[in-house]
Image 1 (cartoon, rainbow, N blue to C red):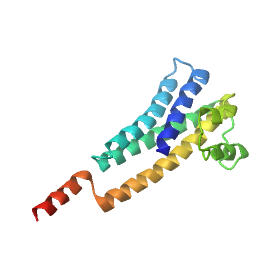
Image 2: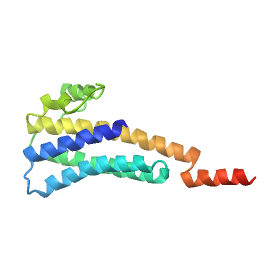
Image 3: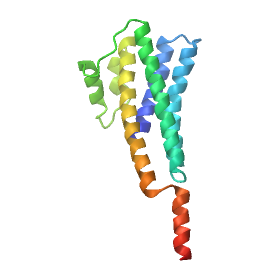
Image 4: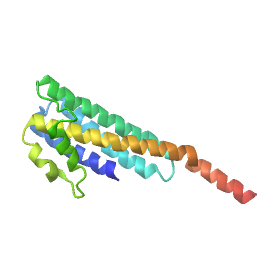
Length: 166
């Protein structure tokens, strides 16, 4: 699942970012790491629930999306408060980072050249979060459509029981 891989990368990079650039005693450090962790964990938990409850899967995927949105704001705040540049989505830097998402074997090392300073590091994470949110939006849309057309697990069981009785 692509959104889970992306969320894992975001979590790992956020932990590193916080270790390097956020005071370890700061509440912001805990908040950022927990938002990144929540994004990753809720995707995994939602995927696990998919076999028995589409409703739960949709709910947890939405929680993951909200957690990543919170993390996005933390990175934007980081840049703004330090008077650092937020890359425009059409900037050469942002486009280069977005292109890396199409590499089949993308990993931490794919982004390493951007992680040397706080401004670039934060902007890379902003790009990654936007990409993950896009994937999650599409996933939520598909899950919702599937739920509308196919119903939930309990509903499908009831239909099967009804068919067997008739």
